[in-house]
Image 1 (cartoon, rainbow, N blue to C red):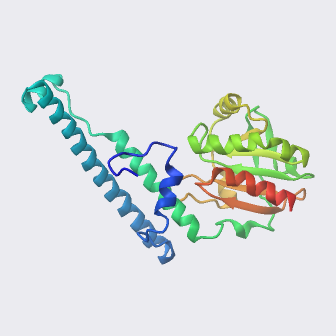
Image 2 (image 1 turned 180 degrees about the vertical axis):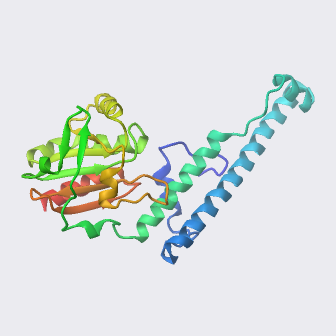
Amino acid sequence: MDAHRAPSWPLELDAVAAHGLDSGLLHPESGDLLFKLQATLFVLLTGFAVSALAVRADQEVTDSESRSIGEPQNTVLVSSLKVGQRVSPPMPRLASQVVITVVFLVHKRERAMADAYAHLVGTEFPEFSLNNDEDRTVDRDSILGSWTVIFFYPKDGSPGCTVESCGFRDNYNHFERAGVTVYGVSSDTIESHRDFRSKHGLQYNLLSDCGGALVKALGLKKSLGFLRTRVTFVIDGKGIVRSTYTSQINMKGHVTEALRAIES
């Protein structure tokens, strides 16, 4: 990978994460607090390094343009700026690198840890009452009597959440044939859910957990302290959790693992 080029979002995230898995730069097994300190330092150092490279690259481009037109560099810079205009840093490039770094850290963390919510397997899914995208109430009684898949995702319309949601859409016939009901859950509003579902042709309903009541009832935590939960639950007809799958990186794995749990 070219060190002077910022990988584009989201196409190269998995490749970047996979490339750095065995680098040994971070040690998740050393403890949660130490890992977070390492992660924070790594993100900051990456940000500074990429920012410096970007500024240098932009300067080289400016110098080249100045030489090509035979004018002094400062003259070109002054003439290209309006009065009072400030030169802004290359934030898109820096932001891309920071996102890639965070994805790498999450991927590294997931490899070192078992499913964070495996302890919920065999327990009763908690009581809840949420409105869906059709503004109808769905509660725990609604899911009793048949198997249910409930997947939590961070946000409507984000690249990863779109891939995951469309994965359940594309495999919906498998769930339907097995008599399984599918629900997606996030903190987005009913209106946002309605638009997201319509845009991508999702056959299943989306539940709005705006206040985070169900997230709290399940004890779901944010990854690295700031990434919203991405976890899938498979629940049997008696309301017992039979399988959990947690991953911020492997979007399609949520669908694959849910189907595997149902077919087993």
